Length: 194
Image 1: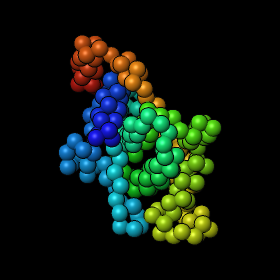
Image 2: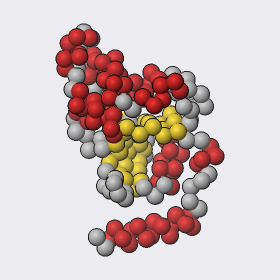
Image 3: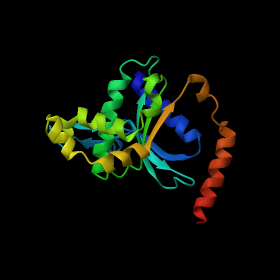
């Protein structure tokens, strides 16, 4: 239940920034779940992102995103889960998944504090993909996997990553509902006149 609550809270916060619209969770409906679910290239298994949707305003107008949400109080095993997330992002980008313009990792508990500034680096993406090479490339052989790894794609994935840390207090800084309604109406009016 905490995961569902985290996804709902992250969705509300993202929409509250007024830069996200049409966000949905993989639990909202069967069709939402399908849009956020992809297959690992090898192993016959699937995975799903928690959230997806569209962005508005320059420089992200009409870009699509998918997100993984971790509503944790402590770092826990987020490092391991983050590496798997990076491999999933690589697979999504490789498949040109329609939500792969941006990949967001949203958490309430920072992790890997000593390497935080490098978590969205191409090297980190490559390392994570190689850790999951059996599902991504169909091989556990490090040399063979390294040959199959697309360095430019890893660099592209790294450039699309967002690391977002929320807190209970931060969530209260969303625009007031009256203000949000006024801004939403104005955005709708402007979008309709383009």
